[in-house]
Length: 495
Image (tube, rainbow, N blue to C red; front, side, top):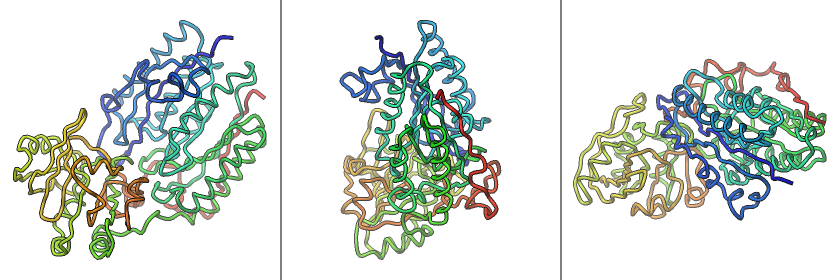
């Protein structure tokens, strides 16, 4: 029996519509053909699913979080995906398709990129082709996406230690269903949008109520007649009608799928007031004062409002300006690391000056200058580290080692610092542009706080001013009269 033909394609991005940044097609770094498959071991040669299907890469575009995609750039990527699928279908029908999505991409002038792409792909591959996706739990599932895609699953941890497992589950679910006779493959889907909009820093699975709610997911998945379950907590930094939490359950027992989904959505709603920040919070002045006064080190500070992995422009200078001007830090004798400020011209100039040079630059706020103008940094270049796609500089000032980069990037690993000659374990204070600390930083920190700083991914959602999301919405509105299950929908499957 021939293997099922399965195409792989998608556009994966988390994009803040509250940031002036844009994410171009080039920044999404499209992979094509075999390169698409090489990104994942499970369907590569020797992988767990390699022999389960004829996997065919088309185009996969992916980037760290950022701003919205310009409409023309999206149109180009979309057209190339569709042209590739048209060519494949002309050779022979496709049995399945893995649509690799994040769930929180935004396109300028469009409300639902994922839904639009799914509908366009469906029009090419036809009704009999099964479509599966594995998404980020900080993504959004519009009714259009839920109806168009046959198999949906999502991460079950935040921080996302199960992201590779989720992508493999999406592919495995697909080939498992393709092993069934035609006419019995498509499961029922229960879709329940819940009017909750919260940042990931308040919904981490490290703490309740998310720990308990996400523990319910594998319990539901294990029920006879159920294939998969998921909670998409949603993406709060885009102002689109689809942005809210969603619970979905997929399976052959339609009634059980619906009852399980509504029960889980009800639990989520009942526990909504329990959500809180994953760490102590405060203004940057309050947080930095606590870090300076702390008897333990390293003390990590999260500069959350400009987190590049949530969609911040990355070059907001507000926090760095405050840090460099802080008299208490200067008088304490303690040292801080700041990672990072992207400025291409500054990084190139520092590299040209070379290690040992005393420099004075005006940096940052090239993309997002709303919270603060460019910041003046004076110090000595102590490290220059070029790489294939970036250039990283360490500028040592009297109290702060400032990491300057040509391109914005996150600092999540100890090696991100040590390869720059910095030892975060011996630093007094480490300020990183991040939300909740990623696992290595979390394990390294003797203590930490989350600073409520301004930027395109401001944790204070009311400060952002959503105008187009569905209302009322918790926690922005009075929701005492809301029926959280009012918009539940059951899409019936083949059985």
